[in-house]
Image: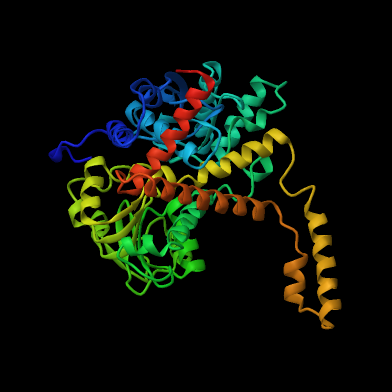
Length: 473
């Protein structure tokens, strides 16, 4: 956030975006207030003995909405976390779940900590203690509030949380559903790790299926050969860049990290770069691109697609006028400030907003939660049946044509969908249908001129309907 431009806080920015959407809707003031209100916020402070000394940690969990249960949202571990940020992210989760028709309320959590300063054993101790506080206060359970990974957390932390819940509630047969994003062998689901990045890919592909939308972004044709700048090569940015470049022919011309950026107009091999980062703990010595210390300035590099996949408030009123992308896809939460969003709209830059663009994670989290509650992996009952039907179809083809089909076709027809296939199919369908609904909202309301407003109008309409139907207001 740029103080020089007196921009609103992250939470106020989200509320302003919601207000903008409400202003083009016919919504009663009371319902609008109910939709915007944060239901509850928990702050906990707890001591943990680390290296012989007692440290006190502060954490938060915000329930923005419980119009659907459980409330859903990640828990991040970061040295900059605060309650303002947590409430803003919880609100985003409410709108995010609604836009992709995931029947959850919105929640978010954070722990004020720098994970790099603690060992694995210390992180486990801290995580289990934090989990204990959340469970005791009623902010973590399979039926009311289900966390997931976020910045600074991952499968490891989710496994610790699930195990802690299990020990406190040994008679809850659904204990494994108390968190999502777990390791597959501890109740997780295939495809969850890459879900947000995969969702970003599906969003971009769906956008390019609509030639009118592509034209509005001053582009034409398909994704093949389009240039792309990625900010943040964490879990989301890495997978989005990898899938777009390897499967859709997008050329990644720059990668921005916290300590600099890499530029290669001929394209950067994302898998090669990812391996280099694993081996050398940084991008500075990567031999196949030019390293630039002023990484943040590379956001202004000319490209077709800009994907900010790092932190919030990366494009502000300070640099928005210098952005040279044609399409911005918000893979991170809140990377564009409210003031910057208005500047980008006036410049004619199309923005696919975070509330839709990065909803792949919560979509597959929903699949994982359903898998845990039903106690059966997807595809277990029908996969072999589908394979047998495929074999019969192959026989029919051979009898009808008098020719043997190739091994490749035989394998394609005779293969039954496994869990990963079904997860990807469900995610693709979810992201495609959501975008089509957003487009319909724009087409039916002449007051809406940008995708962000269309996303919020679509989402708020669904939430308001829920309140009215169950008689909350």
